[in-house]
Image (tube, rainbow over all chains, first blue to last red; front, side, top):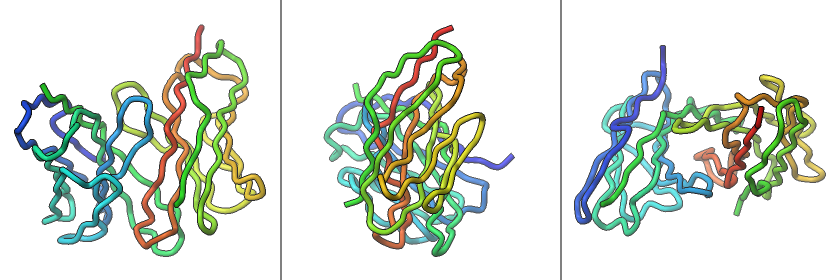
Amino acid sequence: DGGITQSPKYLFRKEGQNVTLSCEQNLNHDAMYWYRQDPGQGLRLIYYSQIVNDFQKGDIAEGYSVSREKKESFPLTVTSAQKNPTAFYLCASSKRTGGSGANVLTFGAGSRLTVL
Amino acid sequence: GDSVTQMEGPVTLSEEAFLTINCTYTATGYPSLFWYVQYPGEGLQLLLKATKADDKGSNKGFEATYRKETTSFHLEKGSVQVSDSAVYFCALTSLMDSSYKLIFGSGTRLLVRP
């Protein structure tokens, strides 16, 4: 079955370390997204990519970096510059729908990062 | 900018009760509207959507109608079950740029008691 695989599911990091969260999709979707979820808050967009070798900053990109070298992969690196990285991270993808605007996202199961 | 406002939770109901979760939005143009559901420890799943005014999205007994005049997209279900306990997110597709990114509300937690 097609879907999105995020790994690891749980990750612990010491302060000052960079960590990379993996996101792989086999849906043949063009666009991929990273969202951050904090307790009691909605999802906030970190980065998104609409095509290979191109990506754009979202609303809270500071302290994060991404790459899109392959269509199916969109890894997220949480750098030591991110002041409060403890959160639940969700990767999503979508088939671009041109001008219709009905951009349905498929989500992965998420990765929970805890900074010790 | 575009935004979504949801009623705060948690919403606690007994099984078979009627559910309403309010959602209103502010947006440029006529965005598509969505409800996503998140079960504990999981990612989000699309529950239903509507792409134009007066459209009604429905799935698994849940319904929501796109009301342009009140900029609302309230989620309803006639008889909730314990298995409906989850967090529900209202969202819209921003048309402000070509990204068609989703903007989410803060989520409403629903707890259904037997």
